[in-house]
Length: 292
Image (cartoon, rainbow, N blue to C red):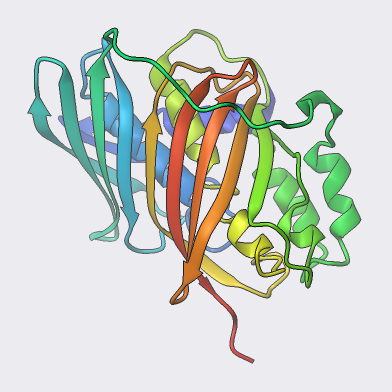
């Protein structure tokens, strides 16, 4: 386990400051706002800490309301909406400087047997054959608006071993391609224990890193790192279907069915390496072309 992963795990270990109230901190961000995946993961941690241990998250629905300040703590207030015989519902509001910046609703369920089927996992290259961020990003140094972006991207993703199975947006600038992107990811080190909430929260953290790549690919745009698009996450939803571990390879298969009115939609599935459908993700974000 490297230092970056240790730091990430510390970020997810929220401080309880009162019944149903938790406090989290942030790490330095690539852009001057809190990374959306971090606040979503922390909010899910807060919700999960008020739920019986025999219930695991099966879905979350969230809205990003304001840009978070990475230099200030975030307070998470949990509302215990309902505790049923099988399902538990929680609502979480993240607050900074007296204003809500993020809202999450999450549902948890006790395990039960039921109908079981899934789609077929798409083909993808073996993750061990793909280049790491340290190996692949330097080739795009001249493409980025700021050459120092290479080191910042590597640092920002150091807690996660994320490898592109398809060309990243900054690799096809000016050349629109199929709106689909694939990455493999796992934490940069093994995790002790099998707490399903931790693995779910780590997948939530990573899920906001690349989901809108497919929107950019459809238009030959490289994104914020290139400077040809201004964007931010608007809302984010996830459904957790089957158990998985975030420290084992997961395939994030992403596509964009639509972009319109200054917004882009991404939808994705996360698969375990042995072909089990673990998670479904949908996100919409602001995707604007900067004015000349």
